[in-house]
Amino acid sequence: FNINRGSVVSRVEVRSNGVIEYVSGGSSTGFISLNGIKFLPGSVSQNSVNLWYNWIPWVDTNNEPYVPPMFKVINGVCFLSGMISSPYDTNYRRAITVLPTSCRPPKRLIFDINSQGGSSRVDVLANGAVGWVGGALPTQFLSLTGITFVTNSVSQTNTISLMNGWVLDYQQHGYASGTYAVIDHVCY
Image (cartoon, rainbow, N blue to C red; front, side):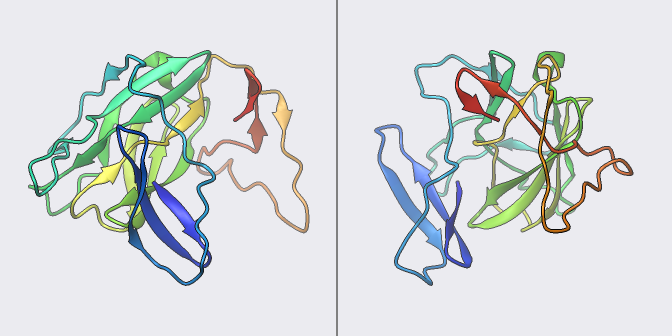
């Protein structure tokens, strides 16, 4: 997971035994924020994600496999998980996969995810396409864990009010407008 450590990004991993481990990144301050870490526990069955091009499930240098790419839809919320890599593609094919109809957002969404200790941008489009867009080159892996969004099956009628000169600039590129939904007492 990408987490905040003041003005820098750091990487933490949540182990299968529940231990949260600092792995890499900056250390400019004496605190680390664990806000935003979200994942499905191992007891929840998930569905496999079919990867495109040269994207494969990631295995670390000790030949230890991590969670393979998976998805699950619960009450209209899609959860992605797993770590992937593209070791044989120096062009870093942007298309990673296409999600099934049940796991698609109403509009294009942007996510900041961990890529070997740096930040990468991964977008999920309304047609289900998932792709690496920019940021840190995925030289070793991209973590899909934490990509969570409300699917197009949920009515998103709550609009976010912006302040201090911020404006929505989404229509030209098909991005989602500022909306949110509360599902089972959780705000998405």
